[in-house]
Image 1 (cartoon, helix red, strand yellow):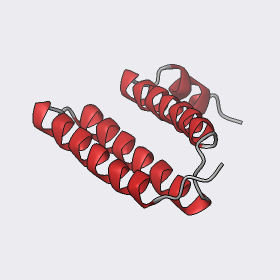
Image 2: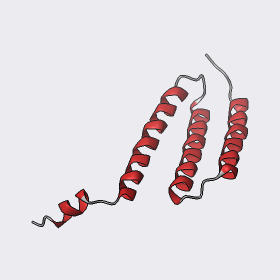
Image 3: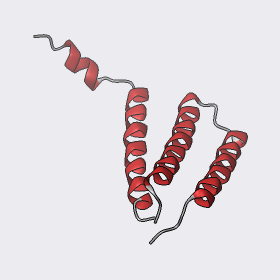
Image 4: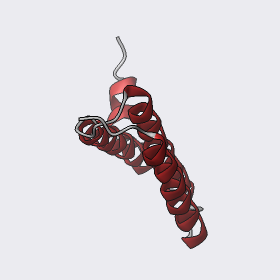
Length: 97
């Protein structure tokens, strides 16, 4: 049995800890969005489409943030795409109680 793996885990670079924190945070946010979408009177296909849209936009933000390439244009592009596609999903859904 080697202690080398334990020493490497303790002295892990800050980058790995940041990536793990971002992954945990995005998983938590995804579950929260899924919980909120569950209260909307959507059919399952529209709810899944909206959740996929949220997950993809969140993933794009995280990838650009971690690579250091996030800027105003990327943020505005993601927000615009989210609003347009969310309006299409909301418009295509039948609101049933």
